[in-house]
Structures are given as C-alpha cells and as structure tokens.
Amino acid sequence: MTTTSERPRATQRTAKPEGQWAKGEFDPLNPNEVFKAEDAPLNVRARILEQYAREGFDSIPGTDLRGRMRWMGLYTQRKQGIDGGKTATLAPEELDDEYFMMRVRIDGGQLSREQLRVLAGISTDFARGTADITDRNNIQYHWIAIEHVPEIWRRLEAVGLDTLEACGDCTRTTLGSPVAGVHPDEVIDATPAIDFIKANYVGDPDLANLPRKFKSSIAWLPDAAPEINDISFVGVVHPDHGPGFDLQIGGGLSTKAFFALRLGAWVPLEEVPEVWLATVKLFRDHGYRRLRNRARLKYLVEDWGADKTREVLEREYLGRPLLDGPAAPTPKHTIDHVGVHRQKDGRNLVGFAPIAGRTSGAALAGVADAMEAAGSDRLRLTAYQKLVVLDVPDDSVEPLLETMRPLGFDGRPSPWRRATMACTGLEFCKLAIVETKQRAHDLVAELEERLGHLDDQLEHPIAIHLNGCPNSCARIQVADIGLKGQIITDAAGEQVPGYQVHLGGGLGEDLVVGRKLRAHKVAASELGDYVERVVTRYVAARESGESFGDWARRADEEELR
Image (cartoon, rainbow, N blue to C red):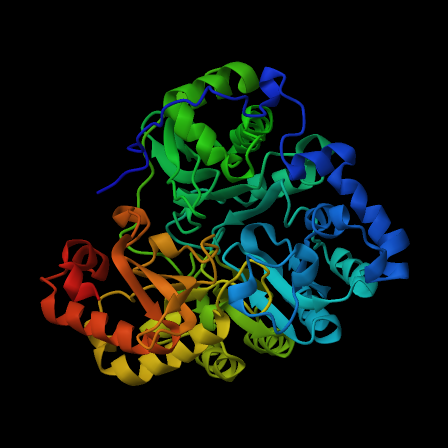
C-alpha cells in the first residue's frame, strides 16, 4: 500500500530563479503574473458591475476576460461547434463564446432549502436550465451573459452565497464532509473552521494573488478527498490531547499526480484556521511563479519534502512548533453517502446520485419541493458529484426516494450510475478534447443494460471517471477505470474521439495512481464494449475479496485491453 508519507523527493532545481517572493524574485515571470501585477484581480468586480454588465461582452479586455474574471467565478465557455481536434490550435479569442461558465462557491457543500430554490431559479432564468454538481461542492452554470451577472450576484448574496474566488489563483472552495454535524461516527464537526476561513480570508487582497489555485479539505471523516488537496485536515484522536486533525499538505492531480504528504502534525479544531492561513502564506511567498505548469504547491512540497515544509511553516509563519500526532484512519473504499443512513439524532440522511453531476434548474426546484414534503431544510453537495438530503424522518424516506428518482436523483442507484464521474468536457470547456457528460450518461445506460446481471456480484461499485483533457478535473488517476480524452486513430485509420485508459487507481487504503497500458486507447464509440470486456474478465479472474483495483494492478496487460 502506498501512503501519503512515501512520495520520493525530487532533486532541488537551482539553475534558474523560480519566481519565489520570499527570495525577492518579484519580476513577473509568466503572463498570468504580468496581469496580476498590473492590477489586483479582485478589482475586476467593480468593472463588471459598473462597465461590462452595462456595455456588454465586447467591452471586456482580454486580461479581464480570460484572467481576472476567474476570481469572480467566471470563465468564458467554449464556442459551440468547435471540435476537439482544434482545442490546442486556435487562439483564445477563437475559442471564446460570448457566454460564461459561472461557479457558485459553496464551502463545505452546505445548503438550505431556500438557497437551493435560489440556485434553481438562477439556472432557469439565466443559464438555459444548466446546473452541474461539481466534485468540489460547487454548483456550476453555463450560458451566463455578462448583462445578467449583477442580478445573479444580488440573488445569491441575498441568501448568503457568492461566486467570490470560486476560480483563479486564490483559495478555492473548501471541501467539507457532506455529513458534518450529523454522522454518528463524527467526533468533531469541522464546519466552524470552514465558516471562519470563508468569513475572514476569502476576498482578502493579501491572499488573492497566489502562484496558482489552492484547494482545501477540512473534515473529520475522510470523505472529502483529503489525499489530493493542497491542504487537508482529517479527523484523528491524539492519545494525549484528544480529538483533532491530521495535517496533510501538497496533494493534487492534473497532468502530474501527487498525494498529500503527512507532516506528522496534530492540530486542534480551534487552530485549524491559523494553520490553514500560515500554509496559504507559505505558498504565496515560496511558491513557484516562473513556470505556470510548476506553480502548484505540490511542486514546492515535492522539492522540499515533509520535514522542510513543516520546519518553514512553523518557523516563518506560525512562530511555534506544531504538536506531533498520529495518522488519521483511511477508508477502504470511497465514502459517497449514497443511500439511506441513520443520523446521530435518529433521523436519516439520504444520498442521491445524478449521472456525473448533471442536473437542471427544474430538477433542483423539484428537489426543494421534495425536501419540503419530507420535512427537511438542509442538503449537502459532495466531493463526488452527489447530493445528500439531511434530517429525513423514517416515514418520509420512501416517499422522498420515489419523488427524487424522476428528477434524476437516484437513492438506490446501480453501481454504474453511482460511481461514474465526468468533467465539463467539450460541450463547454475550452481545454477539452472530447465530450464527457453526455458520454457518461450514455455509458451508464449501456452498462446498466449489459452488466446489470453483475450488480449483486460487485462488493463495491467500480468507479469510472471521464475527463475531456489531461487536467484530471474528474480525477482519472484515482479511478478504477480512468478515461483521459484524446483524439485517436481508429482501426480504419480515421481520427476520432477516444480515451487513454488508466486502471486501478484509488484513494484511502488503495492510495495509488492507476496504471497506463502501453499504447492502449479506446474509441469513444467503443467504451461500452471495453468496460464490459474488462469488468467481465475481472469477475471471472478475481480472487476471494479482491477489488477491481487490486486485480487491475496485478493482471496481465492483455487481460486489461
């Protein structure tokens, strides 16, 4: 088993300055550093409200359009009709549509029924009905016109939501446990730390120019993907000091995957915001700004290792040593909270699986109605594109399940619906090479028909993650079957959408990057055939109790093709 403390250290690069502010290397070294130095990204909010929303899309200069507006949760979306083979060949302005993707920041994934109704209304009124549940607790819209942004912000802010720093080189939405405060196994509810960070540090100009994005996970249960965040706090009981959090730093996937390193430090709940802030400042000052592709915290931690990272954090930013502490427990399988589960107060939490997070404003409004009928005022979004309704009385569970199913939310899903994730893909993303959301929907339906007879034979769902490009927004390296979009040559010699396959990746106890088979790619039209073939082989060849990941890591390459 691979652990978070076993990452090999790279040789420290010293040939060129890395653009580290702590070393006095302040000259802008890549185009993003240039536009951030010219004008603070947070200043774009005033221009959106006072100029761009009034004068229209054509009034927005490029450095705001493709740069600073990200700090307000806005990306230009992909112009319709541009195929994936042109993604890397066209200039940015040729890829830009005159509409935006908008990401709503929902720290901890916690929503009230009133907030959900507002989100549903924005989708219906301004986003052509689009709404995706992301794997970072967010709701994501498309087709947003700049003229509508002020009204959208007004509605969001009226119910305590916003889009501030949902994107950009800043502190992104903090992941939290979707069952925080209600799960019987939880010892400490980390929500106060998440709320404090959001209230006091998000939007702080002093923290809004980081080398790149900074992702956080704070949860007692290991159900918020702690291994792949820049900083994670995971619940653990210290033998001398009681319950607190294990500190992990430097995780991230994208084109080069790293798992977070344990610093061997234990942090009590009341100190979590202080340690989080110190780490953000460490990244701001020491992070690499010369090369954009090395600007994530994971590269600095790779070069420094856990010991130096902890030493600098304590000496330069905390001014005191952290307490040593034990490792947090790791789950055997992904904890997605799908299904009916008992809360600590005797009521129920019910987790639902839309296909790959795709939903709509009308469906979300229906969810709010179903919650009201069930007597629930609270729901949570998860780190796995799922939705959890809290506080459901026993006699309301079955009616809720029945009401939610036609809305696209299944509380008793097939393994294929439950464990399939997908990024935005070619439909809207300017980086994508292939389509993902509709492909995931079609694949789930196909696998339910082809492999439904195996559902009862699978001890745990086989996770299938589809990504439209190499950046791994859908976490392809840590899926049982990870599919990275590419344009490939098929058997007839034609260029077609396809996927490079990663097999046997995982988080928790199976913390490992999936293996890639040499020269093995699958055409998008043949995905159903391929998954059926490899899953059938697994069921036939597995040893007693052997997971798909275990089998895929030991199987002969020919069995996996």
